[in-house]
Each structure stands twice: as C-alpha cells, then as structure tokens.
Length: 471
Image 1 (tube, rainbow, N blue to C red):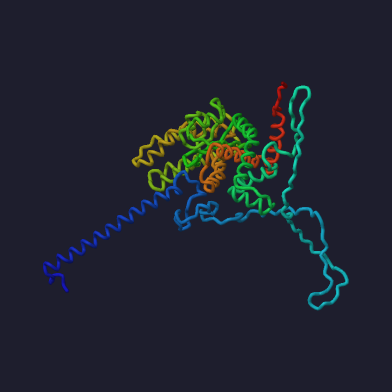
Image 2 (cartoon, rainbow, N blue to C red):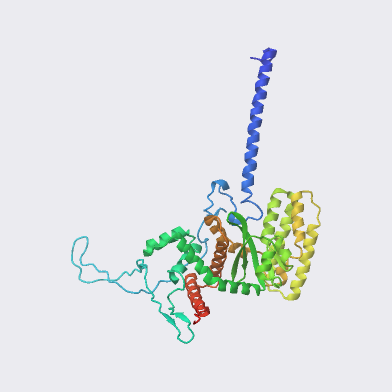
C-alpha cells in the first residue's frame, strides 16, 4: 500500500508505533551505555598507567571479569611460556648415586633362550625421597635442683628440648615455611603433618608454631632493618592489605641484599620515617606517592611509571604523542650512554642538559586536561627524575620494590585479612626473613631451624632462675 493512500488515523497510528519503537531502542542504548561504563571501570583496574605490562589483559579476547584472579602467572601479553628461541637450554647436573643396583635378565622374553652374559649396561639414575617418617617422641625428664646455700631452684635444660610447647624445631620451621613459602592455610598445614608424618596437630597449633618462628626470628628482622637504615639506596613501595577487615598497608624496603616488610595502618610519610629513621641519608627509589617527598628530598622517581602513563595518555590524545616520544628517547638514550661508564663531570653536564630538556617539555601549551596533568606530574618531579644520572648505584625504575610485593599480593588473595596485631607481627617478620635469605642465596628451611634453635639458647642464657627466700 502506498503511504499516500493511508488515512490520517492510520498515519497517526504508525507514527505512534515508530515513536514507541524509538523509545525502546533508546532505553536499550542507555542500558548498553551503562554496561560499557561499568566494564570500562573494571578494565581500568587492569589497564591503567600504573599497571605493569606483564599484568595487562591484552590480546586474549577475554574480559578481566572472565579471568580467574588465581591465574596471575598466565601470560597475557601474547607470549608463550618457556625459554625464548635462541637461548641455550639448561640441564640438571646428574647426582652421584648413593647405591648401585644390578638389573639382570636370565632369558630372552621372545623365544626363551638362555642368556650367557651381558653385552652392555644401560644406566639410569633415579632420584627418590624416603618414605615419610613418623615423628620421634622424646620425653625429657628435666630434673629440678635447689641450692642449699641460697635457695635458688634450677631446672636442668637440654639443647633439643624447647622451653615452651610440645613441638620441636623442625615442626616449627616446617609450619612457618608451609605457610609463607608454600602458601598453605593452617588447616592444610595440619593435614600435611598428619598425611606425611602421622603427627596430629590442629590448625591453631600450626599457627602457634609459626608465631614461635616469627618471635625467634624477630632479632634477625631488626638486624635487617638496621642494615637497610645504613644503605645508600633503598627501593620502597606499598600496597593495601586488610587488618581485621579494615584497610592497612604492607610496605617493602629493599636493597641489594636485604628485604624488609612492615605492616602498618598508615600510608603516610611516618612509616618510612619510623622504619628508616628520620635522619636517613640514602637515596629512595619510589613511585609518585606523596609520602616519599614528604619523607626525603633525595629521591629517584620511577621512569617505568612515567613512561607507562605517558604512553597511556598518548594513546588517547595526539598532542601527547611528542611528549611520550621525547621521554622514551631520553630514557633509552641515557641507558645507552650510561653503559659507557662516564665520569662525574660528564654526568653532571648530562644531568643539566636533561634537566633543561624536561623543563622545556613541561612548558609547552596543551589543551587536553589529561595531557596537562601528565606535564604537571613531570614538572612536580623535576628534581627527582634524573638522580640516577649522577649516582651510578641508583636505578631509574622501582622494579625491585614492585617485584618484592608480588609474594605478599599473592598471599593477600589467599588469606584475605590479617586478624590482629599478632598476625601483622608474624606476617611482616617471616616474609622479611624468607625474602632476605633468598636474596643472599641461603636455604630458608635451614635458616629457620637455625634461628629457632638459637632463640632457645638465648632464652635460656637470659632466663632468671626463681629464688626462694628462706624463712
């Protein structure tokens, strides 16, 4: 039917139907816009200037909400696991056998003909662990003595008998290692002792054993703090953690040989001042968080953060592209130039030249707000972007501290929250000890046994015997 032949009422009816359809489509479009905004908000958690490239969700065709948080080790950058092409393979060194077993055969399995003698040997090394051993239960009959002269009462001690609790050094060390190295819940730690050693203990007992390991290692924790306080360069970073459901922060302080964690309810400059001391004279390598310039003026701001943010802004605003290009060229050029091992005078000249270059960069006129914000951040850190030029021991990035936070972040996903001050104490102590020992190439299990054993000896040496006053 030709529209010219429609009556006025029919045209009105068709118009109302089209208007209703338009309203339906507009409503659906609004819903889609809301959904897109929601997904973009979630995506910014993974795709933002402060997200390291290794953590970005790219090239997978899968949204962050569809990915399992447990799969943080899965490659998301389009690469494949394993050694890259062109790298030489690594082989395990064959161990020396503890015993040799001769494996012989008397006759042919095909025809049954008897063999006269062997014509060769095909050796195969097989490594096996012993069957799980049951616990050794020892009763220490600790004799008590009383001095006839002064009335002092003494209880005899034995190096293998702990002053408290019924579990020995190995159980304490394995409990702490299972929790903080193998990331097991305390209930699973108890199950493991039952399955492997037929040792019955509860999850609470595994917690108390881990707490004893932390108390035993606290002196070494404080020694790590003193070493870091005397360091010339310290990487610092922080990330959130829950304490009894409330917001807290776990800080990391890392040098070439030591790593210290500190769980605090503050994210302010008071934390580095407490851990490092207000008179700390070294260089702090950090990101752009305001707590760091409030603590020290001797900083090196992280170029990895800066370049990621510049790249992110440049992807949305064309006028930011020359900014990102200039920063990238400066950073790459400085890395190559520093490999020539320049002298102090050359370093000072390069520092002045690059400082002037950054000043010229931030003075350019831009219209986009996000580009102006980027230039403002560069300007705010002008005194701290180029510290690494004059100080050879200073790194231009804070990757060391970010790497140190990976283990606490994984544990955060597993444990959820720390319950109280005792949990904070154990968490920061054991994490610090394990990380430092690994940096120094030491065996964490052997070191845990050492600190627990040493603590028992120190406790006995400082124990004050009870004194009875004669009537």
